Amino acid sequence: MTDFLLRRLAQIGVVILVMSFLIYALIGLMPGDPIDLMIQADPELTPDDAARLKALYGLDRPIHERYLIWLGDALGGDFGYSRLFNKPVDEVLLPRLVNTVALMGVAFVLSIAIALPAGMAAALRPQSWVDNTINLAAFAGISLPPFWLAILLIILFAVVLGWLPAGGMGPPGADSFFARLPYMILPVMTLTLASVGGITRYVRASVMEALRQDYVRTARAKGLSQTRVVAGHVLRNAMIPVVTILALDLGTLFSGALITETMFGWLGMGKTIYDAIMGNDYNLALVGLLFATAVVLLANLVADLAYAWLDPRITYR
Amino acid sequence: MSADFGLTAGAERATEAAGTPGQLFRRRFYRHRLALGALVLLAVMIALVAGAPLIAQAMGQDPKAVDLFNRFAPPSGAHPLGTDSLGRDLLLRLLYGGRVSLAVGMMTAVCTAVIGTVLGLLAGYYGGRLDSILMRLADGVIALPLLPLLIVLAAVDLSKLGLPAAITDSEETSLYRIVGLIAIVGWTTVARLVRGATLSMKRREFVLAAEAMGAGPYRIMARHILPNVVSPVVVATTLTVGNVILLESVLSFLGLGIQPPIPSWGNMLTGAQELIWSAPMQAVWPGLLIFVTVIAFNLLGDGLQDALDPRASERQGRMR
Image (cartoon, rainbow over all chains, first blue to last red; front, side, top):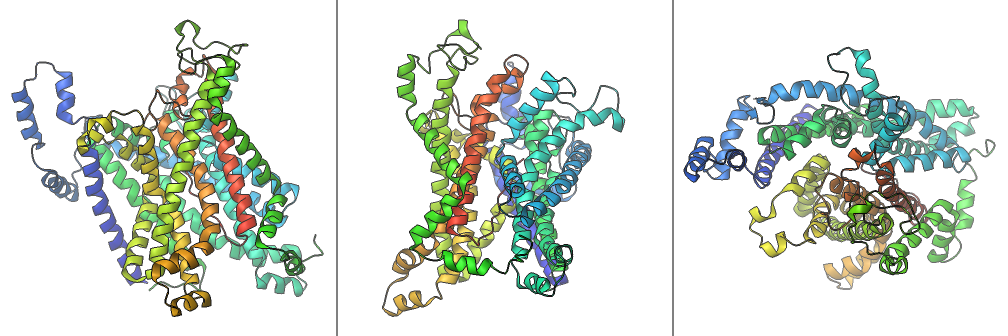
């Protein structure tokens, strides 16, 4: 087990390393580099100045040399400066991470609280009107373009009804939780509606699969009541794959929701990564993307561990 | 219902098994009324967008005609849904945008299916090192943060890659680029499905018999294994069309997908957030069409799955 864990962690390290070079190279291929932007901002810059600046920032060197320098600094804990915020990258990202976890955490808990009972209710009465309604609603949730859902919610609650703010993090100057609460409602609604459908379908499929097993037939043949069969035999087994799939979602809790955060101006990881990519903020985009990759890979590992922990038939070597 | 205890399910299945596979499929599929409705809806939708030039002719409107005196006009006889920010007819823009969104969705889904099937067959049939390399690659691709990565890939400046200006400046490049980008990350689902099915097929008697009669690996893969893995691929591809349309719309909405003047449902929503106070319906129509189309493909895929492949459990990627 320890072997397995160490091997997987080493694999994750290798993937992150490869990804860091790929992203570094890709970002270099995006339009405009820092010197181009300076030339645009300052028309008096001569080609000589530009060449000198390139040498100063090391941009005249080949990409693998620049990457190795970046890697050395990053391993030493120096992730560089963010050009957009004029702050070290880690100082930009930490508060954003807190914002993201607050938003995504609420939406995650809410999605599970809705999806579990809905999926079970649908699976226990297949083809009934309950099942058909829940199934169709779940498909609707999966099929909604998230940015359009955000626009619709803004039109309904901010424009037509005027109940909630259309975006932002809170009223100016106010930092308390209650002042921020109204600003969280629409993004949380968007995230929950976007993810609850998928989880519901998964719970439904999982419970249906468990209901088909021989041990359920045995339990019924023994004369157990429906409640005891469902609570004692079906649910415990059906929840194993559900917990696994939810563990996979843990990664998004930290990497954030790019579209929703951007649409509502929520200063989280997703919006920061998007702004960094669009604003040519190399250092910030690179670290943000690598962080997002790392948490997804770790969540995969957590899911595998959860699976082995919940299902004693599974062992990893 | 409660007195049944699931004990008669086996008997039901036994009576159902009568008839040819085709009859069986049709019987199961027709029972799925939502999927049937989705199929009809998609057929109507495809007919409408395919006939967009005819509709434009009948209306006497040019979908590209800019009329700056008539911006955001309310619905009228000449413009059933009004006009957009440049005074173009909204209904016609929606129909032409639908051509692009649907074509990109289906083209990309077919590309992912072809790549995934070929790689899955090779990995499953040959096994060994090829299999482990391909499957680790698939694991890696699945673990990547999809949307931010697609955004970086979509933002890459093609001229820095040394491609000729004829390609980088062409209007249609953005179209093929989206197809390519999504195919690069989308092949994994089908590849895993096909690999799994191939693994179980290659030990079956009919494959062993074909091998004993001297059939080569390509003949076995193409003639004996492929026909048996078609059902899950068809289901996965149908579901992929919906996902691709969603992804394309997100990228185009962010200004990184299909580039104007080519309309797509996604890029028609670019800037819609600024219009919610003045012209909210501009933001409603394209999204509604995306939603209806995607849900139709998803319901169709669900129906096909029940009919073709009733035991397979599904897992779909989510995007937020």
